[in-house]
Image (cartoon, rainbow, N blue to C red; front, top):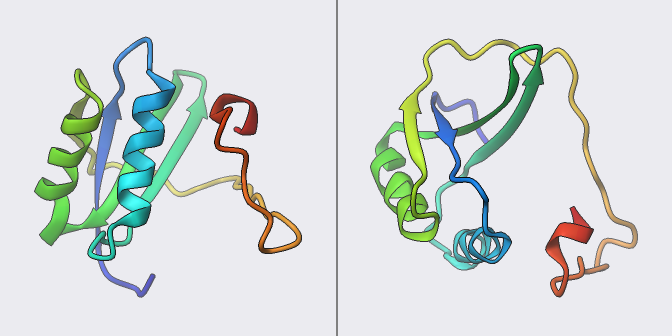
Length: 109
């Protein structure tokens, strides 16, 4: 992603979170050639776990609509005070063409 300014939104996910709905949302985002670049962050601290979505300002409303369509009960909140990342991890699969198991997303994660 280039150095474009991102708008951050805090996600309040419905409980329990339906794994099939999450998979459908991610499939929709991944298969849409017009889908904008997105940043999904999960942060944990003493206060608990929070979920953030970063995207360009021009697509915020479209992405929020997609979230609501796929995850009924999701709530969003503007998040201006995004703290710098203190630790991060990356998961890489080798060989590159190795697919993730799609029959059991919870096991894969």
